[in-house]
Image (cartoon, rainbow, N blue to C red; front, top):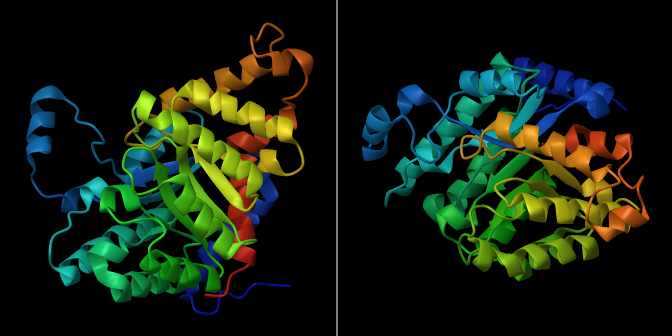
Length: 341
């Protein structure tokens, strides 16, 4: 059955249809970065951080443009990235109308960037029920999906400082799902706003519809503080199969342990993890060099983990292709087929 994407403008509709066909045709041949942030550099205000960068060359999370991300993808031999706006580059204040316009502009930039790079950037939206209020957050979801053609809309309870299981979040998630999209969240131990218990409530509420949990408990948490959340989120995903995780901004040893646990669990669990860089907070080239080396080591008989020594062929080439891109490609394609925008 042909999906019409009837609410979209003709050029956006054509882009979405082409993206769906590309993801369907190429899924396991693609290497995809599941977490990258792009910004309109010309629109950024002068900040102390920018002045420091002029003197010292870098500050944490320095915004990057779509063009800079594509160059980084080329350097890392990565085909494309799932992209959203950068919350650190979208200033928020007490005025909800101004906040709405700023976040709308950031989402519009993502949309335009994906039109410039249709085979390199998979666009996703962003909304914020605290900074915009519930009405504004819902309105922005409608625009992201019905006008821009985004299959995924993200919220960041950590940096935007609201509980993941608040009533407003439930309302936003329900609208995203009603339009056939996938809600996504920053889920990390960097703040108390995204505990495993809150993620569990959202996931159970919308099951069997999918939910993306970016960072799988990482997201900048300290090694000691994040430890329990890493384990809690890993266990939650094995109990709640509608959860899909993007591994990024997380300690490599925990990423590896997650992969071994999910591959060992069998069934569809290995299909519920993708990898990403969290660019510009992480370098695409560094992260994907690491992922490729990690997957090679998982097939090495000298690996110290006893689960791998007992099952030396646990990580098949097909499984690795899934983690590096196929799993995410199928997830996004599935969302487009559920389209109700």
